[in-house]
Length: 527
Image (cartoon, rainbow, N blue to C red; front, side):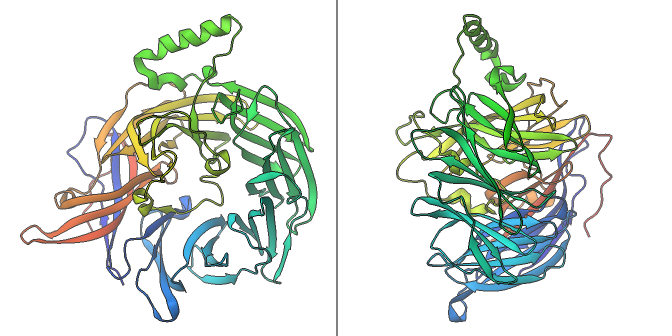
């Protein structure tokens, strides 16, 4: 079906005198014209990588192939499977629970199918979705023998609990009675309780948000409104769940009724009571304003001057907030600041919809699609986004800010959609932050909270023999993988033979790591 070529790459350049990002290993998948180039990448972290391609080849009975290739953390292929789905279908949301991955297949007329995949063995079990209401599914999780679907019907939020073993679907109570939007659905791993978080849609807001807690059987445990913060408006929501009776919520807050970030909040909820809420204005972050470079001192002086006069300086930031990361005993809050771009060159006046953007990279997040980089921009609204910098803040498990850091971006712009930019990895005493743009990786290696203005720049790491024959690069990206490793992927057009006028196109994965000269491994020959 496709030719798989694997390279071992342990030394790519002449021995450097400084540390840098290098390729540990690379794997290539030959593009089959019948199958097409609609590749998707799903990061399974310490369980490896899963690569999907929805075939463009039309099969009998209106079907097409969905081809799945699973790699371990050494980029060795573990298994290759294919399954037929309707030609008009597409792979939508996903959720991973322990050794199982659930894929939501979007069909026509709001019909769905679920594929349950054992990520180690590759066994694929189809699950039929029993539709009981007409809705577009925007939230999706799976646990034990239960699937949870979230969406809206006639402007009201709806959550469906479906026991697919016994074929028993039901609408969860106390959700569709609210004038609210469904914001999140999460599972607490300690007791398998189901958290549903909603935000009010009424202009006369009396609550900041609502949350309903259900047991694994779908029985309502509690439904609680959280009072509206008059002076501090909460507008993105990312929970750290301890149990059904105790949890923390992290997010951005604003000072005005617009989705413009003033800082980060943390609230602690115990037994359905808000124990505390802490607000961290960006001025209190040690490295937040590093991206301003020479203007940093002047801006900080202005802000502090206003505070001394009893006034609060109002920040004006848009942020793409990422899913919380857990590392050792720390909770990492990661976000990318951006400005919208318009056809007339203006970059102001666009209000971000937090219901959409705060949902990116969640447990029900969509697959990363390399073709997303080629989407047509919308006719109305922003045509793209320019990114300023990325921030990472570490909190202890009681919501106390421990340290923060940031990475300034080098003129990064995306068109048609927002996309996460900063990628991070943490060692025992170090923090690596990087982003990728126009064939280059920009990165910092620093102590977790140390101010470091130097951003290093390197060309795309690649095997020298391959690099010589790359004619074209498409839709490349870099993302955090597991431990101290990153993963890079995309399309390459290669000369098959430099003596002939022939070429081939491949999809590739490259495992990246940060090495110092002392750590750098010895060169190994390709297998």
